[in-house]
Amino acid sequence: MMLNVHELNVELAKIKGDIKMINSHIEIIKTNHLKHIEEDLKNVRRIMWGVGFMMMTQMIVVIREYVIK
Image 1 (spheres, rainbow, N blue to C red):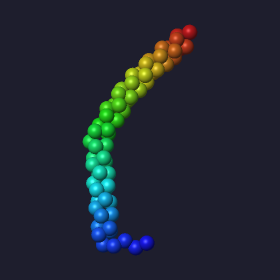
Image 2 (image 1 turned 135 degrees about the vertical axis):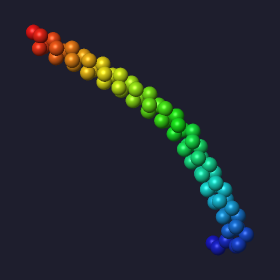
Image 3 (image 1 turned 90 degrees about the horizontal axis):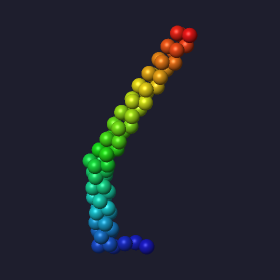
């Protein structure tokens, strides 16, 4: 089925509107959601550093105990 020029223009306008909506959603994700994800990752890194420091301290204590005995 072939569409006439008016129907093609209407379809084109719908597609352009969809593209604008998709672009606005991408902007929202880039500006808002990525900021929150970045903050969460910073918190995870802090926790990992803390756990790593505690594990290293515990290993030093264990090694020192074996060397002393």
